[in-house]
Image 1 (cartoon, rainbow, N blue to C red):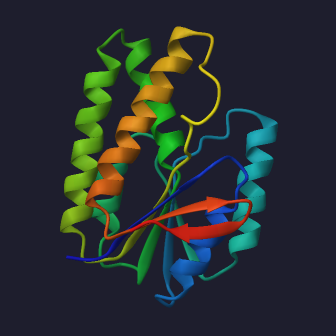
Image 2 (image 1 turned 135 degrees about the vertical axis):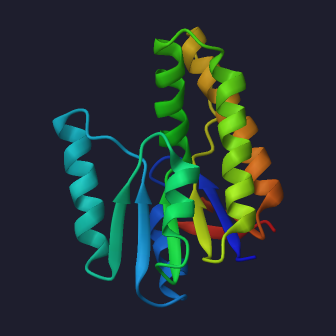
Length: 177
């Protein structure tokens, strides 16, 4: 069983940069499993900036919905895999299940359980980045409140099973576990 490292924090807190630094400690080649989708020009630019910052040591894989399968598929191919980020994956799943008028929360938590099981069986160390979304104001609409609740549950589940947990605040990482 390989190491699972869970990193959380607020938006633009330095989580991804810290995760990349941790990943480099495992040596190259490194895998970057991106969950973001470039649905507009601004997001495409963000994705491009991240890719340029990482450089050539990283093999980028993109998967917006089937994260456990993508992780299992790249097990053993790299020295470490960085998943960035869990909350974008959860957002993608929420939209996916809502569009199908399915019980989004139940399906997403099943997907998160599958992810936890996949992480527990990995040979390759995995670093998972997530946003801590529950420390702000209560969202004004139902979908945003559901997302906040799902993200909080998912973060708790993955943090509990992870070998290490860090929070990053204003660029400063703090190890919690």
